[in-house]
Image (cartoon, rainbow, N blue to C red; front, side, top):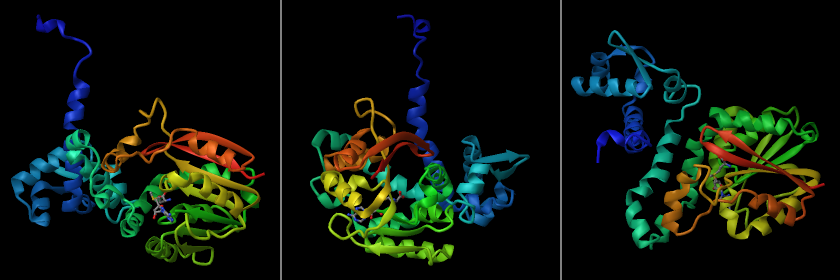
Length: 340
Ligand SMILES: C[S@@+](CC[C@H](N)C(=O)[O-])C[C@H]1O[C@@H](n2cnc3c(N)ncnc32)[C@H](O)[C@@H]1O
Protein backbone atom coordinates (compact mmCIF):
# COMPACT_ATOMS: atom_id res chain seq x y z
CA UNK A 1 0.00 0.00 0.00
CA UNK A 2 1.33 3.39 -0.98
CA UNK A 3 0.78 5.79 1.98
CA UNK A 4 0.49 8.78 -0.34
CA UNK A 5 -2.74 7.35 -1.80
CA UNK A 6 -4.58 7.44 1.58
CA UNK A 7 -5.86 10.98 1.09
CA UNK A 8 -9.60 10.92 1.81
CA UNK A 9 -11.60 11.22 3.94
CA UNK A 10 -8.84 12.52 6.28
CA UNK A 11 -8.71 11.92 10.01
CA UNK A 12 -8.90 15.51 11.31
CA UNK A 13 -12.32 14.90 12.79
CA UNK A 14 -11.05 11.86 14.69
CA UNK A 15 -8.13 13.89 16.04
CA UNK A 16 -10.57 16.62 17.15
CA UNK A 17 -12.78 14.06 18.91
CA UNK A 18 -9.94 12.47 20.85
CA UNK A 19 -8.48 15.83 21.93
CA UNK A 20 -11.84 17.50 22.79
CA UNK A 21 -11.59 16.49 26.51
CA UNK A 22 -8.40 18.57 26.77
CA UNK A 23 -10.52 21.65 26.10
CA UNK A 24 -13.09 20.78 28.75
CA UNK A 25 -10.36 19.90 31.28
CA UNK A 26 -8.64 23.26 30.68
CA UNK A 27 -11.93 25.11 31.10
CA UNK A 28 -12.78 23.25 34.33
CA UNK A 29 -9.34 23.86 35.85
CA UNK A 30 -9.55 27.51 34.83
CA UNK A 31 -12.80 27.72 36.79
CA UNK A 32 -11.44 25.73 39.76
CA UNK A 33 -8.40 27.99 40.05
CA UNK A 34 -10.36 31.21 39.59
CA UNK A 35 -8.23 32.22 36.58
CA UNK A 36 -11.01 34.19 34.88
CA UNK A 37 -11.83 36.13 38.07
CA UNK A 38 -8.20 37.13 38.53
CA UNK A 39 -7.86 38.18 34.89
CA UNK A 40 -10.52 40.84 35.29
CA UNK A 41 -7.30 42.85 35.36
CA UNK A 42 -4.73 41.82 32.68
CA UNK A 43 -1.74 40.08 34.28
CA UNK A 44 1.48 38.21 33.51
CA UNK A 45 2.06 34.54 34.33
CA UNK A 46 4.30 35.49 37.27
CA UNK A 47 1.60 37.78 38.72
CA UNK A 48 -1.02 35.07 38.25
CA UNK A 49 1.14 32.40 39.90
CA UNK A 50 1.59 34.70 42.92
CA UNK A 51 -2.14 35.37 43.18
CA UNK A 52 -3.17 31.77 42.64
CA UNK A 53 -0.26 30.39 44.75
CA UNK A 54 0.58 28.02 41.92
CA UNK A 55 3.78 26.77 40.29
CA UNK A 56 5.09 29.67 38.13
CA UNK A 57 6.36 27.59 35.20
CA UNK A 58 3.29 25.37 34.97
CA UNK A 59 1.02 28.38 35.43
CA UNK A 60 2.59 29.97 32.35
CA UNK A 61 2.07 26.80 30.29
CA UNK A 62 -1.49 26.49 31.56
CA UNK A 63 -2.31 30.11 30.65
CA UNK A 64 -0.77 29.58 27.21
CA UNK A 65 -3.05 26.56 26.72
CA UNK A 66 -6.13 28.56 27.77
CA UNK A 67 -5.01 31.14 25.21
CA UNK A 68 -4.61 28.39 22.60
CA UNK A 69 -8.28 27.36 23.01
CA UNK A 70 -9.42 30.96 22.75
CA UNK A 71 -10.54 31.70 26.32
CA UNK A 72 -7.67 34.14 26.92
CA UNK A 73 -5.52 36.36 24.74
CA UNK A 74 -1.79 37.00 25.30
CA UNK A 75 0.14 40.06 24.18
CA UNK A 76 3.73 40.77 25.28
CA UNK A 77 3.36 38.21 28.05
CA UNK A 78 0.17 39.78 29.45
CA UNK A 79 -2.99 37.62 29.56
CA UNK A 80 -6.55 38.92 29.22
CA UNK A 81 -9.99 37.28 29.31
CA UNK A 82 -11.56 36.97 25.87
CA UNK A 83 -15.21 38.18 25.74
CA UNK A 84 -16.73 34.68 26.35
CA UNK A 85 -14.60 34.31 29.49
CA UNK A 86 -15.45 37.82 30.68
CA UNK A 87 -19.19 37.37 30.32
CA UNK A 88 -19.70 33.69 31.25
CA UNK A 89 -16.70 32.52 33.30
CA UNK A 90 -16.15 35.28 35.85
CA UNK A 91 -18.13 34.71 39.03
CA UNK A 92 -19.02 38.41 39.03
CA UNK A 93 -19.65 38.46 35.25
CA UNK A 94 -23.03 39.39 33.75
CA UNK A 95 -24.05 35.72 33.21
CA UNK A 96 -21.76 33.38 35.16
CA UNK A 97 -22.10 29.87 33.72
CA UNK A 98 -19.33 28.16 35.67
CA UNK A 99 -21.63 26.31 38.08
CA UNK A 100 -23.79 25.10 35.23
CA UNK A 101 -20.81 23.94 33.16
CA UNK A 102 -19.52 21.99 36.15
CA UNK A 103 -22.95 20.47 36.73
CA UNK A 104 -23.20 19.43 33.07
CA UNK A 105 -19.78 17.86 33.36
CA UNK A 106 -20.86 15.93 36.46
CA UNK A 107 -24.26 14.87 35.11
CA UNK A 108 -23.43 14.21 31.47
CA UNK A 109 -19.77 13.22 31.37
CA UNK A 110 -19.04 11.50 34.69
CA UNK A 111 -21.53 8.66 34.04
CA UNK A 112 -19.76 8.00 30.74
CA UNK A 113 -16.53 7.03 32.55
CA UNK A 114 -18.03 3.51 32.57
CA UNK A 115 -19.44 3.70 29.07
CA UNK A 116 -17.82 0.53 27.78
CA UNK A 117 -19.01 -1.39 30.83
CA UNK A 118 -22.54 0.01 30.56
CA UNK A 119 -22.71 -1.14 26.95
CA UNK A 120 -21.24 -4.54 27.81
CA UNK A 121 -23.17 -5.29 31.01
CA UNK A 122 -26.29 -3.16 30.73
CA UNK A 123 -27.94 -0.71 33.14
CA UNK A 124 -26.69 0.10 36.59
CA UNK A 125 -28.30 -2.39 39.03
CA UNK A 126 -28.52 0.31 41.73
CA UNK A 127 -31.44 2.54 40.70
CA UNK A 128 -30.32 5.29 43.13
CA UNK A 129 -27.27 5.81 40.95
CA UNK A 130 -29.21 5.46 37.73
CA UNK A 131 -31.72 8.27 38.21
CA UNK A 132 -31.30 11.98 38.50
CA UNK A 133 -34.64 12.46 40.15
CA UNK A 134 -33.78 13.42 43.73
CA UNK A 135 -35.35 16.60 45.01
CA UNK A 136 -32.09 17.82 46.55
CA UNK A 137 -30.23 17.33 43.30
CA UNK A 138 -32.82 19.38 41.44
CA UNK A 139 -32.65 22.08 44.10
CA UNK A 140 -28.89 22.32 43.53
CA UNK A 141 -29.48 22.23 39.78
CA UNK A 142 -32.02 25.07 40.04
CA UNK A 143 -29.39 27.26 41.66
CA UNK A 144 -26.78 26.65 38.98
CA UNK A 145 -28.93 26.22 35.88
CA UNK A 146 -30.66 29.59 36.20
CA UNK A 147 -27.75 30.84 34.10
CA UNK A 148 -28.89 28.93 31.00
CA UNK A 149 -31.99 31.15 30.98
CA UNK A 150 -30.35 34.43 31.99
CA UNK A 151 -27.42 33.68 29.64
CA UNK A 152 -29.62 34.01 26.55
CA UNK A 153 -32.34 31.34 26.28
CA UNK A 154 -34.71 33.46 28.40
CA UNK A 155 -34.55 36.27 25.85
CA UNK A 156 -35.00 33.86 22.91
CA UNK A 157 -38.10 32.25 24.42
CA UNK A 158 -39.52 35.59 25.57
CA UNK A 159 -39.33 36.57 21.90
CA UNK A 160 -41.39 33.51 20.90
CA UNK A 161 -43.91 34.15 23.68
CA UNK A 162 -44.44 37.87 23.05
CA UNK A 163 -45.01 37.15 19.33
CA UNK A 164 -48.19 35.19 20.19
CA UNK A 165 -51.32 37.19 19.34
CA UNK A 166 -52.81 36.22 22.74
CA UNK A 167 -49.84 37.53 24.73
CA UNK A 168 -51.33 40.97 25.62
CA UNK A 169 -54.48 39.26 26.96
CA UNK A 170 -52.66 36.91 29.34
CA UNK A 171 -53.21 37.58 33.05
CA UNK A 172 -51.83 34.56 34.82
CA UNK A 173 -49.36 31.81 33.96
CA UNK A 174 -47.98 28.57 35.38
CA UNK A 175 -44.30 27.56 34.98
CA UNK A 176 -44.63 23.78 35.43
CA UNK A 177 -41.50 22.05 36.74
CA UNK A 178 -40.09 25.56 36.61
CA UNK A 179 -36.98 24.91 38.73
CA UNK A 180 -35.29 28.27 39.31
CA UNK A 181 -38.34 29.97 37.76
CA UNK A 182 -36.23 32.21 35.56
CA UNK A 183 -38.48 31.70 32.54
CA UNK A 184 -41.55 32.83 34.51
CA UNK A 185 -39.63 35.85 35.77
CA UNK A 186 -38.49 36.80 32.26
CA UNK A 187 -42.02 36.37 30.85
CA UNK A 188 -43.68 38.40 33.60
CA UNK A 189 -41.11 41.16 33.19
CA UNK A 190 -41.99 41.39 29.48
CA UNK A 191 -45.71 41.86 30.28
CA UNK A 192 -47.32 44.81 32.03
CA UNK A 193 -49.74 42.76 34.19
CA UNK A 194 -49.25 39.00 34.01
CA UNK A 195 -48.60 37.14 37.25
CA UNK A 196 -46.97 33.72 37.54
CA UNK A 197 -46.99 30.58 39.66
CA UNK A 198 -43.85 28.44 39.62
CA UNK A 199 -44.65 24.82 40.42
CA UNK A 200 -41.89 22.38 41.40
CA UNK A 201 -40.81 20.10 44.22
CA UNK A 202 -40.71 21.99 47.55
CA UNK A 203 -36.89 22.00 47.92
CA UNK A 204 -36.67 23.46 44.43
CA UNK A 205 -39.30 26.17 44.92
CA UNK A 206 -37.33 27.30 47.99
CA UNK A 207 -34.50 28.15 45.58
CA UNK A 208 -36.91 29.86 43.15
CA UNK A 209 -38.18 31.96 46.09
CA UNK A 210 -34.63 33.24 46.62
CA UNK A 211 -34.36 34.28 42.95
CA UNK A 212 -37.79 35.94 43.06
CA UNK A 213 -36.78 37.88 46.17
CA UNK A 214 -33.48 38.98 44.63
CA UNK A 215 -35.32 40.22 41.50
CA UNK A 216 -37.92 42.08 43.59
CA UNK A 217 -40.73 40.21 41.79
CA UNK A 218 -42.49 38.92 44.91
CA UNK A 219 -45.71 40.81 44.08
CA UNK A 220 -46.08 39.09 40.72
CA UNK A 221 -44.45 35.69 41.01
CA UNK A 222 -45.26 33.04 43.64
CA UNK A 223 -44.23 29.42 44.07
CA UNK A 224 -46.19 26.28 44.81
CA UNK A 225 -44.43 23.14 45.99
CA UNK A 226 -45.62 19.65 45.13
CA UNK A 227 -45.59 16.77 42.70
CA UNK A 228 -47.30 17.78 39.49
CA UNK A 229 -48.18 14.17 38.71
CA UNK A 230 -50.02 13.65 42.02
CA UNK A 231 -50.97 17.07 43.37
CA UNK A 232 -53.30 19.89 42.37
CA UNK A 233 -51.49 22.31 40.04
CA UNK A 234 -54.11 25.05 40.39
CA UNK A 235 -56.27 26.43 37.60
CA UNK A 236 -57.50 29.50 35.75
CA UNK A 237 -54.22 29.95 33.86
CA UNK A 238 -54.01 31.72 30.48
CA UNK A 239 -50.58 30.27 29.80
CA UNK A 240 -48.83 27.12 30.96
CA UNK A 241 -45.13 26.83 30.19
CA UNK A 242 -43.17 23.59 30.64
CA UNK A 243 -39.48 23.47 29.75
CA UNK A 244 -37.28 20.38 30.04
CA UNK A 245 -39.55 18.71 32.59
CA UNK A 246 -42.04 16.54 30.68
CA UNK A 247 -39.38 13.79 30.47
CA UNK A 248 -40.27 13.04 34.10
CA UNK A 249 -43.89 12.43 33.06
CA UNK A 250 -43.07 10.39 29.98
CA UNK A 251 -44.75 7.31 31.47
CA UNK A 252 -47.91 9.28 32.26
CA UNK A 253 -47.91 12.03 29.65
CA UNK A 254 -51.55 11.68 28.59
CA UNK A 255 -52.80 12.12 32.14
CA UNK A 256 -50.56 15.14 32.79
CA UNK A 257 -51.54 16.83 29.53
CA UNK A 258 -55.24 16.35 30.39
CA UNK A 259 -54.53 17.98 33.74
CA UNK A 260 -52.82 20.89 31.98
CA UNK A 261 -55.73 21.23 29.54
CA UNK A 262 -58.18 21.41 32.46
CA UNK A 263 -56.02 23.97 34.31
CA UNK A 264 -56.13 26.40 31.37
CA UNK A 265 -58.81 29.03 30.82
CA UNK A 266 -60.80 28.86 27.56
CA UNK A 267 -58.51 30.30 24.88
CA UNK A 268 -55.48 29.35 26.97
CA UNK A 269 -52.11 28.36 25.55
CA UNK A 270 -49.75 25.54 26.58
CA UNK A 271 -46.13 25.87 25.48
CA UNK A 272 -43.82 22.88 25.85
CA UNK A 273 -40.10 23.34 25.16
CA UNK A 274 -38.40 19.95 25.02
CA UNK A 275 -35.97 17.70 23.26
CA UNK A 276 -37.40 16.23 20.03
CA UNK A 277 -35.31 13.54 18.40
CA UNK A 278 -35.23 13.02 14.64
CA UNK A 279 -33.41 10.82 12.10
CA UNK A 280 -34.31 7.56 13.85
CA UNK A 281 -33.30 8.99 17.24
CA UNK A 282 -29.80 9.98 16.11
CA UNK A 283 -30.21 13.79 16.07
CA UNK A 284 -29.97 16.49 17.32
CA UNK A 285 -26.82 16.09 19.41
CA UNK A 286 -28.81 17.25 22.48
CA UNK A 287 -29.29 13.52 23.06
CA UNK A 288 -25.60 13.11 23.92
CA UNK A 289 -26.10 14.99 27.18
CA UNK A 290 -28.74 12.48 28.30
CA UNK A 291 -26.81 9.42 27.19
CA UNK A 292 -25.09 8.61 30.50
CA UNK A 293 -28.29 8.69 32.55
CA UNK A 294 -30.20 6.80 29.84
CA UNK A 295 -27.62 3.99 29.74
CA UNK A 296 -27.42 3.82 33.53
CA UNK A 297 -31.21 3.56 33.76
CA UNK A 298 -31.51 1.27 30.76
CA UNK A 299 -34.08 3.50 29.13
CA UNK A 300 -34.18 6.82 27.34
CA UNK A 301 -36.39 9.59 28.67
CA UNK A 302 -36.15 11.84 25.63
CA UNK A 303 -38.99 12.47 23.23
CA UNK A 304 -39.26 11.88 19.51
CA UNK A 305 -40.13 14.95 17.50
CA UNK A 306 -43.91 15.29 17.37
CA UNK A 307 -44.58 12.97 20.32
CA UNK A 308 -45.69 15.79 22.63
CA UNK A 309 -47.66 17.54 19.85
CA UNK A 310 -49.55 14.29 19.13
CA UNK A 311 -50.35 13.91 22.82
CA UNK A 312 -51.57 17.52 23.01
CA UNK A 313 -54.07 16.85 20.21
CA UNK A 314 -55.11 13.55 21.81
CA UNK A 315 -55.86 15.30 25.11
CA UNK A 316 -58.23 17.83 23.57
CA UNK A 317 -56.14 20.80 22.46
CA UNK A 318 -57.72 22.37 19.38
CA UNK A 319 -54.50 23.09 17.46
CA UNK A 320 -50.73 22.72 17.82
CA UNK A 321 -47.98 24.67 16.09
CA UNK A 322 -44.41 23.35 16.40
CA UNK A 323 -41.01 24.74 15.58
CA UNK A 324 -37.39 23.88 16.31
CA UNK A 325 -35.50 26.52 18.27
CA UNK A 326 -31.69 26.71 18.41
CA UNK A 327 -30.18 27.30 21.84
CA UNK A 328 -26.50 27.50 22.86
CA UNK A 329 -26.98 23.94 24.15
CA UNK A 330 -28.50 22.55 20.96
CA UNK A 331 -31.83 22.41 19.16
CA UNK A 332 -35.07 21.91 21.07
CA UNK A 333 -38.70 21.75 19.94
CA UNK A 334 -41.31 24.30 20.93
CA UNK A 335 -44.88 22.96 20.75
CA UNK A 336 -47.59 25.61 21.13
CA UNK A 337 -51.01 24.14 21.88
CA UNK A 338 -54.25 26.13 21.97
CA UNK A 339 -57.18 25.08 24.08
CA UNK A 340 -59.69 26.87 21.88
C1 LIG B 1 -34.42 19.87 33.95
S1 LIG B 1 -35.22 20.75 35.19
C2 LIG B 1 -35.96 22.07 34.27
C3 LIG B 1 -36.13 23.33 35.08
C4 LIG B 1 -36.61 24.52 34.26
N1 LIG B 1 -37.93 24.28 33.72
C5 LIG B 1 -35.62 24.83 33.15
O1 LIG B 1 -35.99 24.72 31.98
O2 LIG B 1 -34.47 25.18 33.43
C6 LIG B 1 -36.63 19.73 35.55
C7 LIG B 1 -37.46 20.21 36.72
O3 LIG B 1 -38.67 19.44 36.79
C8 LIG B 1 -38.96 19.22 38.16
N2 LIG B 1 -39.84 18.05 38.30
C9 LIG B 1 -39.65 16.81 37.78
N3 LIG B 1 -40.67 16.02 38.10
C10 LIG B 1 -41.53 16.76 38.85
C11 LIG B 1 -42.78 16.48 39.47
N4 LIG B 1 -43.37 15.29 39.39
N5 LIG B 1 -43.40 17.48 40.16
C12 LIG B 1 -42.82 18.71 40.26
N6 LIG B 1 -41.64 19.03 39.66
C13 LIG B 1 -41.01 18.06 38.97
C14 LIG B 1 -37.58 18.99 38.79
O4 LIG B 1 -37.63 19.18 40.20
C15 LIG B 1 -36.75 20.05 38.05
O5 LIG B 1 -36.74 21.27 38.74
